[in-house]
Image (tube, rainbow, N blue to C red; front, side, top):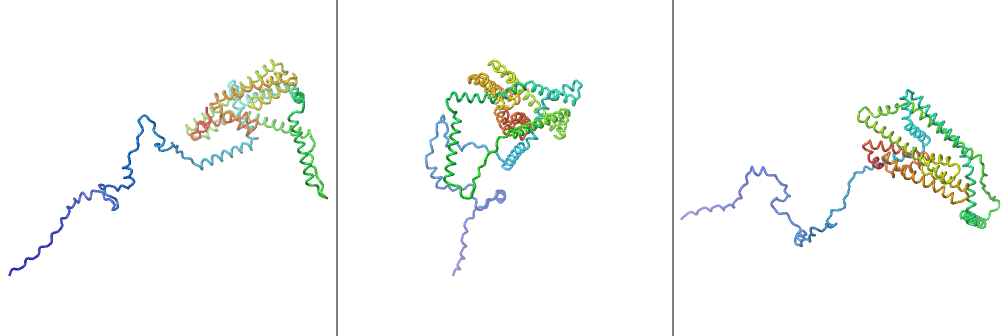
Length: 439
């Protein structure tokens, strides 16, 4: 009996070849959820549908690209610091309020700086001739004050006649207009209509609301015209103006007598670095040169306006043509207001002298043409050329400072903006303001 042979064990499945351990350690390990690099990524159904769709038609090579293919409008991303901008605006508004509130202090200071800049070259010439600064400044200011006083005194008679003739001329113009229209003027008609409407309204209110018993009706009457009040206010205004002029004269004298004292102080304040001192010197020189050129332009245009006005009035036969020429030259320093005063007053006096509206219009038209050509065209152009400021900036500066300081602002606005531009051109953070004011 044969013994059964033992059953052979089942064959094992073929094992996959083991990878090289060194290569496995060198290869980077991927996270368990990341797909293998060789395995294709799953494609969504929408992408398969897009691949099945026909490609869009391409425009020809010469045709311009459609706006739909552009990514969008070009945008300039500029970081804006809202906090710094708000602080700058608040500082600007506070400065404007301070300049308006303390105008009685700032106006004499600015006038004295303007006169100091204009008269310093003359004092330096006298110093080269071995005349001390304090003596040369005193003699120069006394000569200027005495010259202005003598000129005003010599022209006072003609000016007094001119002022006395203005009310008569105004009454004559009104009578002439009434005679031409044959009835009352439109202004008188409107005044009568307004008076009748007011009377009707008062009657209706009295009828609708009758006074109660025991209630006394009170009528408020205006105080009568008192000439003393107006004389007192005018005298106080004149005394205030004389006081400010006295302050300006003394400030100018001290500034001229001190020489370069304040300039040296500004250099010390600027710091010890050579670059800061150079920038400070350049700023001071720019301000001085631009203000001196501006004053030369103002003197030239004022003389031109005065001579042209005097010759035109003399040719037309107007009396006191020299007085009108001097008045036109002096008032030319106040832009727009001075020309309006000269034009209106000369037209009234011409009507009083000749008795016809044609001559009044001719005199006023001649003055208007001269001031328009010189004051509104030549002066802004020369100012922009000498100060490197745009004519628009000059015009806006005159309007803004005239609103801030009145008549003195019209005279001082442009020199102040010249100084601002000179500072802004030398300071890196303020170059945008200087570029805005430049030509």
